[in-house]
Image: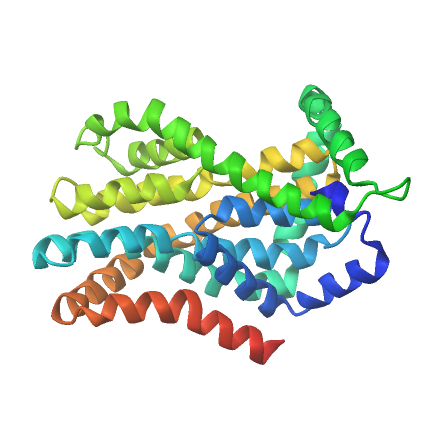
Length: 338
């Protein structure tokens, strides 16, 4: 994907960057696009690819990453709707699913203005990326790059028509398709191999305390490369009354950290320092969000419980909630701010 953007030329790059020139537009593009594809990994990986290809800079990529954090939680919210015909069960399941939403929304509300005024994510992630480079971290991925390069070269040669330059458009289409296929089968295969065995252990022993639940969420998300899967898995357990909302909350925070691994892998393959910086910005954003919100965790917990109560009274509430938060608000603000 990074290679494909290099063939579009300066005009296309400027046009693409103009789309996200306003950080608010970038933020809601991240929300909407992630809600549509139901994968923050896809959106963050695409942002990394754009940065690696020079079509997007770090400052404009960070709001997209922040928005993707909100959009990714639409999946587990949809999972909870499956319990809608059983009031008590739905109340527990819906609150367990949307607590992730409220955490991400509050994190953006608190940290987005701070990011705009100080660029703390950009500065902090650049330091981390430089530290990795100085330690030889980027050189460690050369074997991966050696595996990827022949495929990139083959696609470039295949898209070159009559001795002309390779087609950036065709390369981009192929790269997006390959990205979706890779993420899809990565999730399906790892879910079949790992989740089926781990699910039986989702009990009060694993969620004995917040630290253990957070680490569990982190590890499982790293394994399946999808926070949507790990957070969705605990929704039925909450609905069944096996896990409480307070047990699930730190688990979702761990999943938020674990989901950054996909973008990190994508950035390391590019070997591009700016792309690595964006990936670390995603990690730094999630860690900072946890540090800031954990002391006031009663707020997202209370909001989730209150909205769940309204949802039990009217089945239209979950529908309007999903449409308004993930689609209507982003579309309107993208139009207005753009």
